[in-house]
Image 1: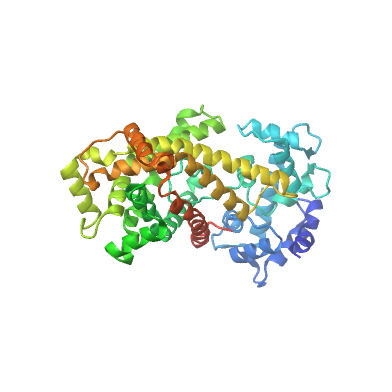
Image 2: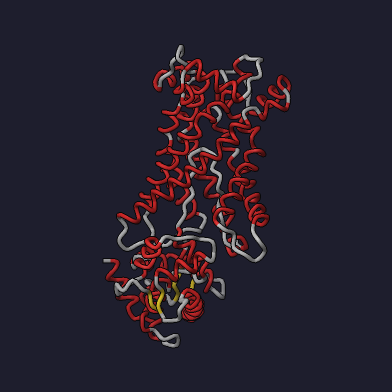
Length: 475
């Protein structure tokens, strides 16, 4: 149904002349559903959805770009002026992609243009991008097809169009990911970047709170479970509830939520600085350098907020009445163990970022591209469910690789709270665990950790989308 409606609305776009007022008038009249002579964000959003053009932030950005008198909507003159200027920018981008000047773009031209920007694309992926725009089935895109595809989408330069093709989402599962958000210069000069960071942080806070009982059980099993003291899912929950009541399942969640904001901010700022250091002035940063910048930013953020990680572990494991709160906990650790206690387990924590981030990203890209190769017929965007599935599996693989280091980190953080005065190193603790509990002793608590991945990713995604809509940066 929507495809028919879209064709009826935009079919004339293929032969529009830049000076043809009638074609613009027809489109404007169809979008202006309340006939008040203006198109606002809600009307434009509804019109785009009806045409099957479901693109994040498109309606808001079109209105903001064309709204000259700042009344929050577009009259016919503003609408016409915006479309004329937008078509001119689209034409320049089209010409830059049309390398042989034959009036059409093919897969090799897309590959070549993106390669010059440091983005290496397979021929199959380039063909998928073409298929999403190709109307006549020639596997080439002419100007009319290009214009129809992007006319009612605010991307006009190559950088923005690549971002649209790539399609990314932010998911928080309570673990530290190395790669931060990336924003265009335009987004950084507006308020979009901080709104996206706020949306991501809010999604992380709700997600972590929703899965906090499973997270506490994981830490509980990492520290207390062994061959001689087996703790299962039900037994672990029962022990915690008997000791501190139902609310004790959320111990340590407060600081786990509090550390999202500083970690996100430091990671974002550090990422921008590392990108500048690694890239030549005026040149695009290559993919491998972007990953390096992201990994270093992740390590910088982790170094800065690591004392909060130690506090989270101690508060998670605390017995009823042991600490009055996070400040009391910090004061007691400082008095009894000194500043060094706030960096116990730091080395395995830092080492764990590398396999987690590397495997997570590699598996995610492999799964997504495999799905596109086998199942996608006319799009380069696999859709939300597929992206969530890829994210869940890749995160699971990353955790399998890094989990032993996470377990050692938690044990080192918790050492003093267990009444041990012995200072154990990472390597000796690894040997001790394997000698006492065998190889699988390194994976104590991994079951509740896996159990929280799907609900955490789902909650995070839903809250993120709602927050973006509430902050005016969605659809």
